[in-house]
Image 1 (tube, helix red, strand yellow):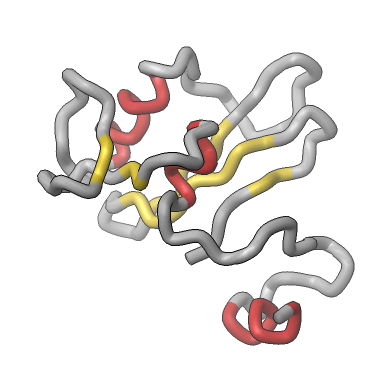
Image 2 (cartoon, rainbow, N blue to C red; image 1 turned 60 degrees about the vertical axis):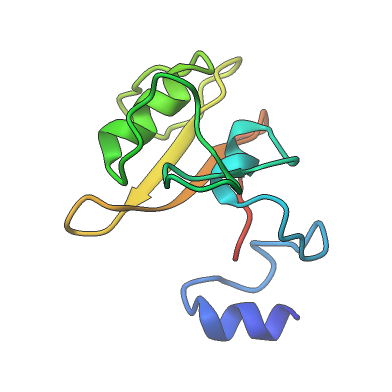
Length: 115
């Protein structure tokens, strides 16, 4: 499986990542970063997608920022590790559509769910 990820993500370097769980379609990278492995997080109007109440349901960086604000996150100046501060990184396409979310661990490394 490691080889598959290296082919899909050519910037990954051997030894700098590890697979920590099996595939699971119940949740996505947004949910993983939010600490919720029970639901699929996405702003779509859908019966299978969760989105925090009162947060605008749109695929925009501002909507994702607002969703994480409901969990107590604030905008940070950088992704540099700060002891005692948990950070998330929201990745977006050139036109501002969020494409991936990762969470920083206590040791400064990053975790995310692929797929």
